[in-house]
Image (tube, rainbow, N blue to C red):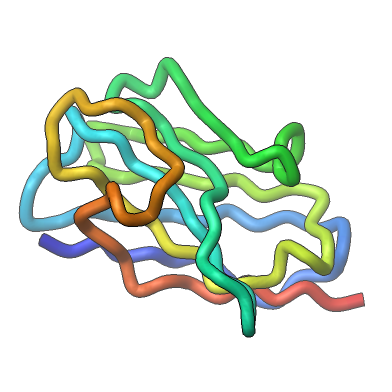
Length: 125
């Protein structure tokens, strides 16, 4: 099982990026998927998660209204649209998936069983 995150890069403050996470090795269309991030010197933090159906999404307060998570189960892919980037958004972004089917959304990193390698988002002036 592998989660491959991509789409990070260098962007000016106020700009946008679209992160993608493609799963391989098994399907995750019945699993919660999430995005976490980790800035230098800080702990990994929850950003957003999406239920298996895509009907429900959850965000940490600092990204509400700016970030949008979505998924395409036919492509085994989850996306994170990040808009109006701020300096404090700079981090390595990780996608993650829960192994249990139809499980509930959780913000605890320890509840996620599969992790991608991370994609770096850098925000400049």
